[in-house]
Length: 531
Image (cartoon, rainbow, N blue to C red; front, side, top):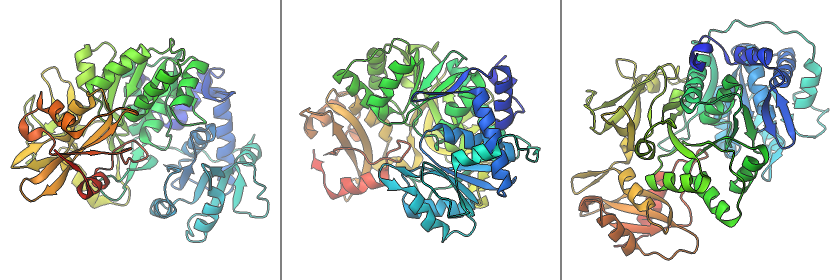
């Protein structure tokens, strides 16, 4: 039986209760030296739910989670699910203004936050925010500050302890209609939107991911560095739960720490975005680790080129699969399987997960035949309830048949595999020709001196838009713009060859690894090396 079939109709809370009952002693979370079993996470979530209910949280409320990838995030997530409370996971890297916007927009009545992280005093930040957000009535802190003098602020451990053995009102949750989370998009193409996901959305996407990569109870998963992101919630926390596997949470971010955790915890499955994997390859070159327990590396979060897949397979000694993930679909839409032909795993993002349909549409909404480039549209159990408090945006995102219009460009080949081309809004129109950045980026990524690249359009009085390649060279490499252009001319048509090459130290990215193309285009327009 597939995990999708086994957990059909479950809520996130009932899925944990099921696993804690069937296998309470199995390790769910690994955090440094701490090992938290399914039974322990369930017990702590029950206690925290009782404590949160006692301070007034109830079904329909929103609970913001502003935490690094720690066990407290998972415990709070499950406690909220038990109460019918919607979680609002937020990045620690948000500015004060961005954090205030998300808290106000979501109407969060309580927040759980780390006291200090990466030099920021979040306790002081939230104390200032609470004065401006009357709906934010309570704060729960993870740390050691003595806060006995403020009756609005509680320590996480104290709440878990106080709720132990206490009852709370049971909540009947419809997994298909009741929201589990409001996840904010990265906002690379505009203002962030709150994507409202049901329990059924998240479980379907998580189960489909786990089934696609063959996740089993003996697996140990590493590389989930952002629990606030939809991939961290779905394929990370929830997929691991559904499979009865074990998830390694990384106290320290970065390539060195992740690789050390692979060796330390004898991990078998490695999730990651392309930029993280590139950094890990550099770390491995500097210091070898024992990665012999790894069986698969799953690359998601951004398009991945053939050259990187080859380097990963050689450097890690594992099968590399890819996934296409969207916030609006509760994470995974398509995934390649380990059994897929190597050519498909390298050049596509696989086939749709169970229950999901993918179409490629013309600008007028007509479905295009195979091997045609158009907008990717998705229908399935993972598709969001909608954008929170934005009914017009929600209506604009769905076509008449209920397919989500992703804004991504792609094609489906004759074997049913999806190939990503780029973003609809990223298409560069130069001298009347359409240039898809992903095609050019794939070629440049294969250059031995290139670590990272993004291709953007910049205004040009003659061409309309000039094709500009923003290149991050490998440390110590010597490469010129002319070499990059000549490299492209070998396989690309003339209209796709970069007109400009701009060398940069790094690409501006969102917390989830997506390139901020608008920012990059402004930088490229200001200065560039003509070719």
